[in-house]
Image 1 (cartoon, helix red, strand yellow):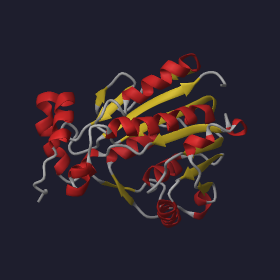
Image 2: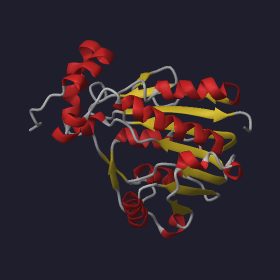
Image 3: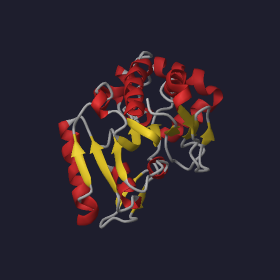
Image 4: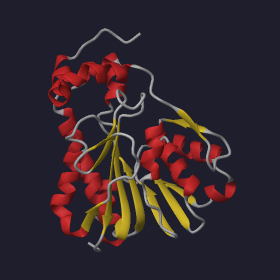
Length: 262
């Protein structure tokens, strides 16, 4: 049973965005999330939301080179990437939190065969700070950036998290998301693929952050709309929402191609 607490600021914020749709969307978020046992290329299946699979598969992989999963824990999207990457591709699965990084390592160890696992390294740097190091720029052939976000499904499931929610939270998170996305763009090599993903309902954290990327680096990137049919088109990508996709999501996915080497 969902807890009875209601945060009026939270309700007003999302009603302003979704209007009459909000009531049904909110109800869908209180239901169990959609889940599948992903098994392609794995020695043990791993359960995750089908929309997470779509986000990970949206990254265009090179024939060879190093790719980055910048905020990789708990590891589901890294497993999906690993399951489809060719033998010439290596993956750096990064997670800043030590505790979450240990869980990420365990997930990779348990679900991947030895050969695939040998092409994946785990790191713990601040991806936003790495973009400021000129020696690291243009290092990666592809980057998946699944950023920390509002995660409204989890907020609604926790009375404590819902009570602590403030209208400034999406704006605060968007600043961190922008730092990560702008850094990722600098870390990406020319002709590389960049996927930006969130599980947020807030346009401020989704298209709003991507708009800043286009505004700053527009001549050096090309929007590359994800090619899965699920969800609804937005200015820069697609958003999958559980009220219209059988419990999948929320998941926002935008994809870009870097066309010049900044």
